[in-house]
Length: 343
Ligand code: SF4
Image 1 (cartoon, helix red, strand yellow):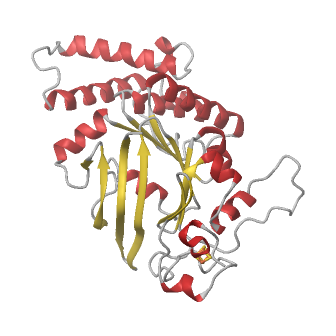
Image 2: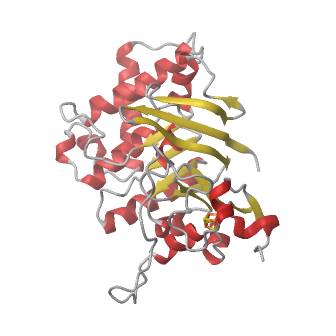
């Protein structure tokens, strides 16, 4: 397996009016080419900051990275130039954001937004030297970009794209807008697609359609996907790997099937107990009591210790390191020292 993304011991802090929030606390994560990785955890666990650090979309300031690396194809994106970042965003990484209702500009047609985006990506490529010596006229470029936009809209399931492309975002439903945003994200033929809770704002039947579309694109255009979600059930349907995050740390990671059958970390077990089954009785879901702690003053040691029923003094003393508990399955918890449950 060839790694596409390797995040190594990444720390991130946010400077706020109330103090410095320690948002990432030594995150390490690998995404191999062809992976469909689901990153799960509650709001405030650092999922989006981890993901948006890859295309360097976390604004600095207020963010700063005291240490760690974010390697994309072996290159540390925290150290590259602004021009290299533009190239990375133009043709290597596509991003689909959470809210399709605000992802498009309401005063421009879909055609204007898609064609401008495709041309901007091409210009970023020309700036890197790609395609020099064969620069078509502006009119030809725009016509070719429109043809590509229509193809992309057709691929993501927009009916009659030749006509619909000239309409405005308010004429589309939430699910259709999310399809347009997916088309925009893949328009540069990226290697990595980051989907940050792409179905949260949609109703259940549309959620299933969007997830199916992402799964089809993975197969068709050889995409690697990082899917961020609160919903471990969504990951179970779609992803081959899971990383569970809690308060700025990856606490468990491994193949989806292995983690769903054999969860180890108390937090992962709590998330799984919060998935409703078809025959759930009202009031039977347990979940995880309490809330994610403030990252302005996070708990010492294992940050989950304020909510964990297995807590001991050792948990509060130091952050537990990742332990291998099965092939490719790692967990950060003192209960599994040396890969076996501590006696
Ligand atoms: Fe619970 Fe301790 Fe394990 Fe943290 S290290 S999850 S507090 S048992």
